Length: 369
Image 1 (tube, one colour):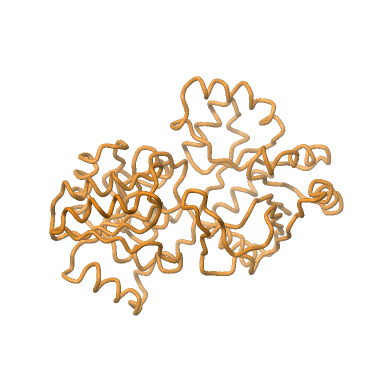
Image 2: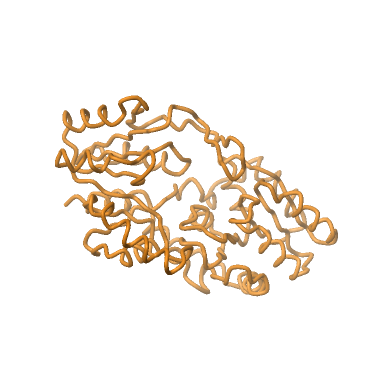
């Protein structure tokens, strides 16, 4: 099988997937077509700064860059010369426009990878999308969704179930699970800083912007008013100063703002933490949910986080609270602290055993046959 991916730029979770497939599925071949010029960093419009992931994003897998000039004609020539069984495109408009048309014109199967959801759209917008996008969606042979909420979106758009397969924003489970590994110097450093007296650590990794709602987490922690807990808010953004000002009004509580943490050090923070919270206002998926589960945290998500539908088993490895309800979030933190850890570990293990790179690649192959 030969698969092509049309992608704007590499990400910290997709590159390890490509590397895994290149190493473990040698009988299959694939190529990544990047639309953005080579760089090891990405500008985040919400943070208004460049984000560096701390490892080489262009190593260990086949890829090439499609230049802006004559991009479509170059791509067409490639798929004419090489036999592709499937081309996966990360969108249908803007920089991705016309790629599906080229595939269809050359009799190459084409799939749309999407993470669209219903919960962030008004009813009239859903109706309008169904009407307007019918022509766009008709161009695609398959639809690769991130999870249940996107599958529900596809169903609402009238896409037949037989055309839908799973291709989530999966992460490297082994990278994030440090349970059987020696404690690094870095881990011991953060442990002495954030859990010196064996406090249970509540962790959030988020952009400090309205969409990711760090306020729910901070307000819930303040309501708990417990000195045996530590809250670690990793991240940065426009609302950081305001968050710190509120936290400083509660000096008796242990609330920490370590700032931006390199991706390579996140596993140690998950290992340190008892509970991870993703409180987003609008998150079609949420890769940090799987990261935290792989790191053996209990996870609490708002009901606006898509990953919660696939990865959380309520009352066993996590909870879902109503976005904006910090009282309910505080209650779930209390409950989460009491959950049997053996039950949590078993549930997390069962979840990620079915949510990994191997499974995702086989889902892609299934969409071809």
